[in-house]
Structures are given as structure tokens and as C-alpha cells.
Length: 67
Image 1: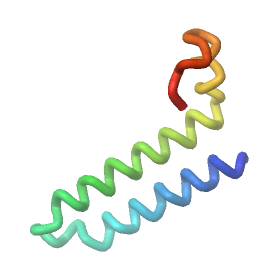
Image 2: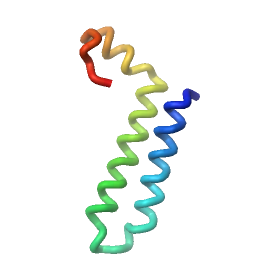
Image 3: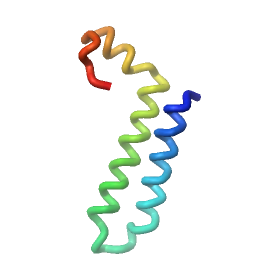
Image 4: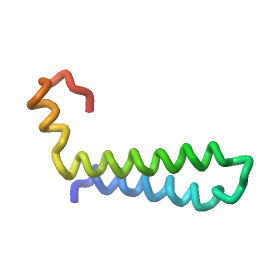
């Protein structure tokens, strides 16, 4: 596994841990939702790296595609 993939998955795990710590606190529901979304996005980012999706995007759209 690439180092970048590992780092994204570590970030996702930290976000999920944050959710687990605060999800029961009603006044922090928006914060829990934010961290849950971050977990999903970080996991998706690691998946894109593993599947080389960025390389395919660049092939389709040229080097101006954002990474």
C-alpha cells in the first residue's frame, strides 16, 4: 500500500474516532456529522489512489484536472 493511502486511511480513522467520542452529545451533532463526512471523503481519497483514478482522469481531461 502506498504511503499516501496509509495516511488517508489514518486520517479517516481519526475522524471516525472523533465521531465515536461526540455522537452522543446532542449539541455537537453538526460537529459529529462533519467528522463523519471527513471520514468518508478520506476513505474515498485512499480508494482513488489505490485504483489510480487520478491517472485516468488526467488521461481523459489532460493535466489540468485537479488532484
